[in-house]
Image (cartoon, rainbow, N blue to C red; front, side, top):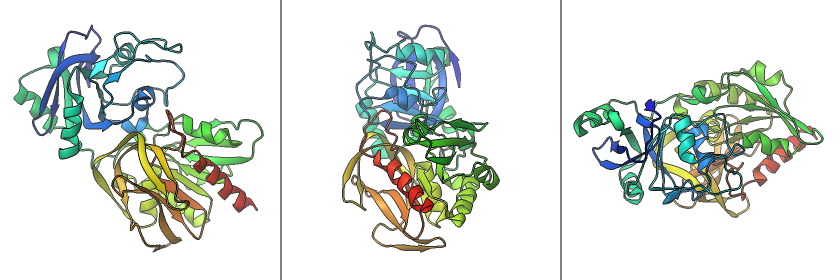
Amino acid sequence: MTTSTRGATRVPAVLVLEDGRIFRGRAYGAVGETFGEAVFSTGMTGYQETLTDPSYDRQIVVATAPQIGNTGWNDEDDESSRIWVSGYVVRDPSRVPSNWRAKRSLDAELVAQGVVGISGIDTRALTRHLRERGSMRAGVFSGEAIATDAELLARVQAQPHMKGASLYEEVATKEAYVVPAVGEKRFTVAAIDLGIKGMTPQRMAERGIEVHVLPATATEDDVYAVSPDGVFFSNGPGDPATADGPVALMTAVLARRTPLFGICFGNQILGRALGFGTYKLKYGHRGINQPVQDRTTGKVEVTAHNHGFAVDAPLDQVSETRFGRAEVSHVCLNDDVVEGLQLLDQPAFSVQYHPEAAAGPHDAAYLFDRFVSLMEGQRA
């Protein structure tokens, strides 16, 4: 990605998709060029949390909500230390942000972090195109980066695919750190950072858990050096088929029967550790309004998602695995995609979505309590 930070509001920009579809608009954020996988997010709020979610590494995010930037940018809602999206696509950016916590505009933050975007295009048409054709490689070009359509398309088509991409080590912490328990400490959890969002260890800390966040390259010895009551595997970007290291670590944790909880990428890692395959979804689930049924209770939840891959496990039968019986615990009501797994003979479960719910909804917060219950049961 190359960028310039000169004024962008009147600078022409183009979005080029790998199948040759081109959208023309105006630069938004930094001026220059960027490449990534074009995906759409259906959240009407929470763009700051979306942009700073490490799971969006190397993706150009299309906002389906027509107006973006109304609440500006604050210093409290970041989910990580930086913006991770490769590019940002919006229809109607706010000219004047208005929120009591705002410190600057979204546009200014995109410029400051060198994130190339485009505005003024028909995001409805673009979203329908991606739903019909699937997520695909794309490039955003503005200012001096604009060349002929044929040249830009050739550059997009030369980019790597998301399938087969190993990205989790790019976004994970390099050094271990601790998030202390809020109030009385009840448990210790080793959290494997595959692209963790800041609110996730905070949700555990609120339940009296001291969270030791470990790098994606952590070993079994690293995990058990902190004497964990439970082990957590986080969300993250890329193709889970490349994550042999985390799969091996989870296999070791399951062999020890330590209470285990995984979300998103962690759900896919659990699927692989149990012997299931994974596959790439046509256009994925991204946003904060995805309906999921918890099959253990029958309850339907509105949930926050960001995933382009899923676990290939049978929906309506109990599977025999090397670690005992396993079943699908959650399913997406839009398309029957596996949204959760649980073992029936030992304390381990996972979900495909984001129960920390930044920026909402909060229907799935109980999953952290379920993790606590597993650790209580193991201690007893």
